[in-house]
Amino acid sequence: MKKQKTKYGGHPKMKRIQSAYKDLFTILSSTNPFLVPLAFALAVLSGVLPPVFVLASERLMTDGLSIARGELAFSAIVPTMLVFIVSAVLPDLLNLLQQVYVEPQTELIFRSAYKGRMLQKLKKLRYEHYENKESREIIDKAYGRAETAALHLFPKYFCNALTATVATAGTLILFLKIRWWFLFTLLAPVVLERVLCFKNSFNIYEEMETYWEKEIQYEKLEKMLCEPKTIRENRLNQSSDFLIRTFQKRLGGRNREYERYYFQNLRHHFAERNISRVGQLINAGLLLWIYQTGELSFPTFVALAGAIFTTLAENLSYYTNIVANMGYHIKAYEYYDRFFNLSEETYGEAKEVPKDCSIAFEDVCFTYPGTDRQVLSHMSFEIRAGEKISIVGMNGEGKTTMVKLLLGLFEPDSGRILIGGKPLQAYAREAREKIFGTVFQDFTRYSISLRENVGIGDVEQLSDREAVREAMQKGKVLPFLERLPKGEDTMLNRDFEGGVDLSGGQWQRIALARALMGDRPVLILDEPTSQLDPMAESELYSEFAKLAENKTSLFITHRLGSTRITDRILVISKGRVVDTGTHEELLERGGIYADMWKAQKQWYQKKWAQKKEVKSP
Image (cartoon, rainbow, N blue to C red; front, top):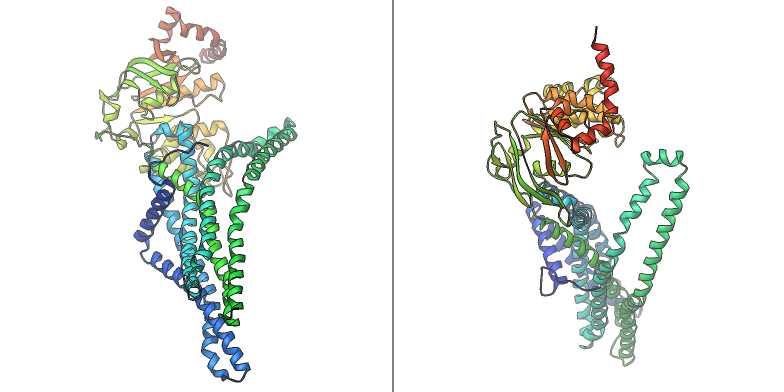
């Protein structure tokens, strides 16, 4: 795989690590300034104790032999024995203190800091990032991995590395008193192993990213076998066996890819992980050679030999584990950095909602980021304040895209969008949020209470039960509200205990009531009724038109049953307005609208005729 240069320059891997730890320590010091010093002290003390244990064990054996020969009183060994016991027991107590205080405190701080930071950033991101595959990957991986990566980097890796460094340095001093070259024979194999492991850990996780991308596909297929909505159809269509076979086939293919990759890297892992073991055997042999020359006492030989295979091996293994997994966690932190480099929405300074909420598109062109097809092509039209407009056209002609630009979710490539005579970009965020009340085709079904589902349309009035109830009344939510077990405080969806499932029509009423919160001057219905039959949709649009009295309102649809109730119709084709007029005017002129009406009129004429018969005396 071709290596890419990062923004850090120089030595990118080390720069990534430095950047990550700088951020971690900034967060910790600003929240709990005593936590890092405490973790540092615990780690250093834990590192000092192993060399003390080696010295105490050597002294204990030497004095024990002297006592056995009658050369020393037993009382003389008591201080050494106490040091031996303390150095053996205290590391576990220090580790326990880290587990019950440092780690939980760090987790709480990181969870609050990282989730809080990311949620604030998510609120400011340009909407285009949510519809861009590359940006979505950055967002998902940063949000899913950054907190876990931070907890591994501190305190786990940091404290283990510090403990291992102090313990290794202290133990090396004991060996240097015997021969100076032990510094090289003990460290050279370890350094070589860590360098190779560090290098390959990054390479491994960069390669594995290509495989992890496929995990999303397997997760989606797995959900198709588990979710209640899909289980119903699976059982009715007897498709469960087919989906299970498909899942197992794809899973088997993925596992074979993993196996091939790991076997390719097996020799690297084997060589890396055994360099230090070979070094241990060599150094033990050297120590035995020195012992045979008579320069070492038996207790000293036993204590130092034990240190090679226990104290040094244990503490140096921390480095192996750290560098073996460092690649993954630093990679996760890189996504976190890239996430915060994603561009944010820009707003103007006009905070007042315009009294004249007219709308104008002036020669607007737009192409979705990352694509080549122009969706809106020199679109121009005007809508007067208080006017009711139907915007019609076949699917895929740019109606919903036009709404996204009007709401400021995307910015046009060229041209201008005016609200009340001012460019949309001139309005501050709070002003924009108070202009539009919108019901989208794929409106959100929040797993919160019914009252909150409606009130979230205007969070400033969320606690005002009367305002929320008024919106419910306008949206005709009250008729089914009374049948719910806890009324407006009933939890919706089955994600929580006591949650209730609602029908599609009931959810549409909730979405409509949500849009009516805040008494916004511009109301937009972007085909939220596509699941309804044409007549039911027409009736709902008629209700909406009454609720939108004296407001600028847009009815986005490819069905034409609602067009008679609006003041004017805009016909969109190939990303531009190709015709405008009333229902009768457009039929007289012919064209796209007339063709659409001819294809759909049988849906409505029978029902309209029945209504006329009912009204006639």
